[in-house]
Image (cartoon, rainbow, N blue to C red; front, side, top):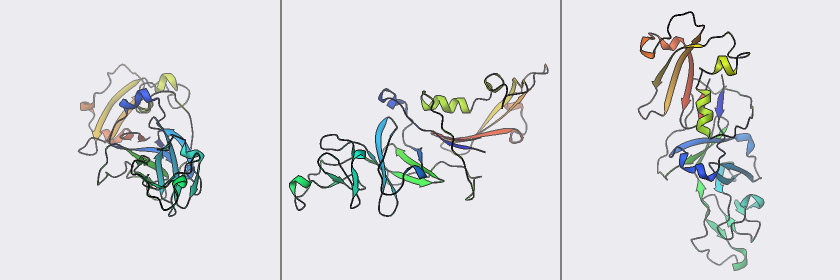
Length: 246
């Protein structure tokens, strides 16, 4: 069983193709240690991740509101990220708390603010909310059959494609006997019964896909409506926007 958090790394020209108002798994928890700034490109933007005094993950646009310097090149000071250029300090909300050149008692103008994304940390992953601000954000997309004792290993393989193409590939079993003919597609099972798709929620954000590959013996493939007990077939589960379970 595997759970894959897809890393959304794309050019700005593809921003419009992101599914909005979703939680995206973008990092593993262990990739953001305490007392260190972590710079990554996700969701088409340069982001900086860090942890506050309580260990909660903060995700902000990696760009100072003053002159655009990369905050990730700075450091953490008194619970804030300090810009390496002029020392501006931004708190966990993105609000600038101090402009050193103006003196510590001088109020900071409201416009000095860094965009900050809502984050959650669960199941060993860090999730970022990509969408409109909401008072009550939806729960994280994950899998009910994975309990607290779930463990995993990491495999990294960069695919220079839009993330939706990578997901499409993972949910496609028709290519297995051709692309993976000597591993998971061995046996020449080119005929496909199904797939049967069953939505798990009213919003249609979670689905089960039941399917079966078999050797072509001359009988036609079974259409979804012809499969009486699809749950007995191989199952894939996908949760929008970018996690799936094999």
